[in-house]
Image (cartoon, rainbow, N blue to C red; front, top):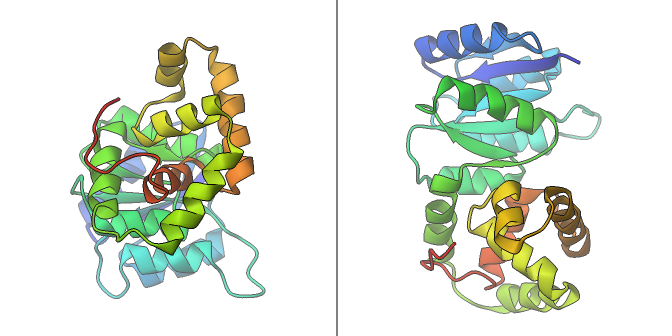
Length: 229
């Protein structure tokens, strides 16, 4: 099955480069481009892509606002694509807010070409893409600024529904480890890790891995600034 992609970025050279790279893949079809968030939303509604590559900072409408529109469409609009945020900076509060809005993850613009191609495939398959090298810094930096309160207490109580092993898996997800790395750390089969992750998401009523990372920090399971892995 071909993955339909649109690219939303205010730099023409970036759009052209990404389009050429992705279009060269037999399983990816670039079906549209846009230079700002507003136009990106319009193109997405017309072309129904599977994945939208969305720049964070753009004129007219930034990537965060555009992602919110696509991921929380008005009544009557059924299509809801996966949104992968593109950023120049490895720590960007806009990206955190995009994850909360429902984006499937983020990728640095200067990532190797192979990483971009893999990211599109991962997101299209329904998984979240969180670059381990920047996830801990991004989420911990934001979480450190959030005051503890009723929200954190309520989320911490929800952790009681997890088994010790599920809590351990959630903690390692939040620290940026991949399924393969978690399997190695806990001496489990990778499929077993996937099963644990599925149960964690179901019990905590979370949509995907991105929300799991945010939940782990906001609930206090993982302490901001603690970079143990």
